Image: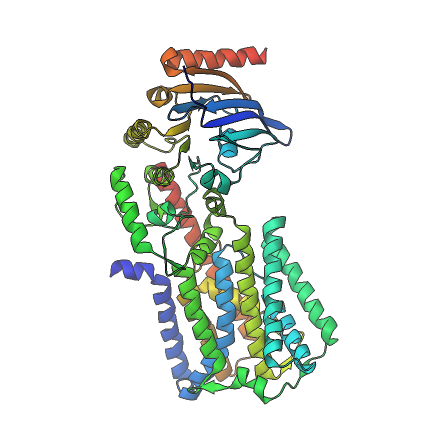
Length: 322
Length: 251
């Protein structure tokens, strides 16, 4: 029992936070605990969870992707452009997903072969991707794709948006991949000790490129949902979404230096951020505060993660000296 | 007299890092089934040579012959799977966040249903391996980062041995160990030697070298300057020889 609590302390902590915030908002607003509001929260968490799950993969591998939001923008614009060109929904969606995978794989290639910091590579990629979106659209949104496409973003199954179901399925799949497969295991070692992989005869290039491509895919799926939900593709879509995703992953217990992945923690953190957003709206507090709170939570999570890493390193050093 | 072709031949290896020349035409051979120790002072090029043989570094020139097959350089993958070389690195090459059996099987995991890790099987195999090698790992689920230096080193050694490699390279294998663990490791080496494995031992500890090695090769400033049988020398003589060679080279 003690071992279980120790192993899942982060998740238990996040659940307690959810209960506390939930109790506070229930007192503050009679509308908070109504079924329709809870469904609202779930709906708003769906695509954010997909993005955060993608970010969990790459943070477990020791990097972050600052171009994820721009990938959402470009993939959305490509889908819209294809739909307007009469390519049909399946082909347009595939083109959008390929855009995300390509952008991610390109990040992976550059990170692996240039050895330049992922911050610089993905920041540069972010500027380039959003720039392409702006060039294609001329800075104006592309709108109106028809009811069939909108179903992806607004359709419901058992009262819950399809996007939420997609997010839940992808989260479960991610948990299995990260915890039960060789690929998932190597992705984590890529974060904690890539040299160990190489010295065991495992080439790291393929793993770096593929894990970045997974992030790109997650961003592109998010783009499909957002574009369908808004019935519009905007060059400014996805702005700061990577900040939300990184915050959720760090809050969820995945170390900022990688080596471990906590998908359930990421999911709980996305729910917390969703509840906070909803609570601010219910209490009529300006959405400007959301940005501040997200930044603040990221800072706290990174500080806690940093302290944990320092403690682990200190313990390892002490054990090595024993 | 050795009539058999050596299992490993290093021929005229050069390696430099910027202006620093770590190896300057190093040539040497390791006979099959013998323990060959490579000794030398700090900066003599011992670890660089070990890294070249195990595929971590590419030499500037020269060649490596393993079991009759010659390579201009090796990758880690080639060294492990073609050269059949198992290496215990000085940094141990362990993933501190993974447990003992996940580290033992890193790169050669047991898989079921084509994609899923078979943790149960790996744990059982690792437990049997530890038992056979008399290695005490109390909790197989603990991340190796929370284990003692000796336990971590024992895991790295067990990984190299379990791969059933024909050549084993040990780079300062007892540097992080206490006296008891060092003795334990030396006993393990003796067993591997009795099994007829070809071992390359890189060590600073001359007494340890004389305990276990059949042959000693002295590396100085990137070149092999002497090779002899342990029966022909003693730790004191070897020490004097290294110092003398260094003085000769300096002159």
